[in-house]
Image 1: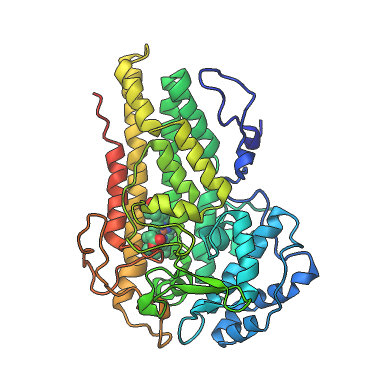
Image 2: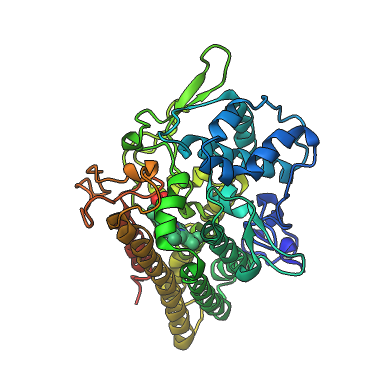
Length: 463
Ligand code: HEM
């Protein structure tokens, strides 16, 4: 059976090979949340040549500060000629790069996005079920290339199709995530089977085996994460790459007090929007691991309005819940359906197994408990590695002068503004100045809370 035919949600209590729902319904492939085939390199219809030629020379136009003028001259192209999903995704990648290049690629931030960008981008993002910005899907999931004989899990042969800076560091930064998504892909069907074994068959051997597999898989993801240092320089990341991924939320200090106006032409029609920037926090794979284990995140990014004019508010929602809106719609739906199908995930299922035994021996129950604790520890350790990386790539460079250029628009917004933390207190002034993530989060307290919530999930009540 191929991974695509793996039963996802067989009827409860019945072990059947006929899946009522399959992973393909959620856009999940044998590469997990990555597409099955490497993304298109170009839109096939020559009608889209104006977009393609601009994105091809993106880093040069940004460096020469000609991009805005070129975008302003673009014709307003229709999305009617996008016929397949890979084409819609390709169009999203192209316009997301052009959009962030337009906003952040000048002496001052551009507050107004022109109709040649906004009109097609709004239609495309609506089609894909994501906000009209450079999401994790645009810069990572749909922006890679690899040789035909290689697999996307092989980080050494992966390259980004597009970057803002033209640096190998930026390509590597994106490709580390792509390799992680590919490496973790097998965990999706494997963990659904383990959840099924825990909740319907109550098969201790399968549950313990699945959880051990999960711990090992997370360890591999952590190994890939640590390879970031090989080819992505922290100074290049902080001063040159990261500013382009910034959003329009909490960006007053960078010249976007109202966010960005998406000008839809027709005499001033349009909307001010405040949206998060591109962040790996939008990875569906990592959130899937949380759902599987039953990790509950309450940490908030911040209390600023989000999605102004769209009727959506960030307030009251945890960061993890909020960023699901930045995932492709089928992936978001998948996470919601899995959480609904297995409420409380493994934490609840393992707790139930341990509480009533279900005929399992003491040894079997001990094995399940230890495997569960090991898997949650592995995910918390992954988050610890990530925290260390954030220190190396954001906290330390934020103390050092920017040797490359005078103005760094997006980092200007990172200065301490006394953002409220999730506990309602002022954000911890751990490091003078730099405290917010590209998504606008009060950085270190938020990441530490996410890690601690993962450790807490491993504390089973039943003994
Ligand atoms: C140079 C490397 C990296 C840096 C500097 C970095 C920075 C950050 C920052 C600032 C946040 C806070 C949220 C936000 O601003 O949106 C964040 C969150 C997050 N990042 Fe990274 N990141 C890096 C690499 C990665 C990679 C490769 C992954 C793997 C997919 C990842 C996964 C996450 C996740 C899942 C969150 C949400 C918080 C959590 O669930 O623990 N990051 N990251």
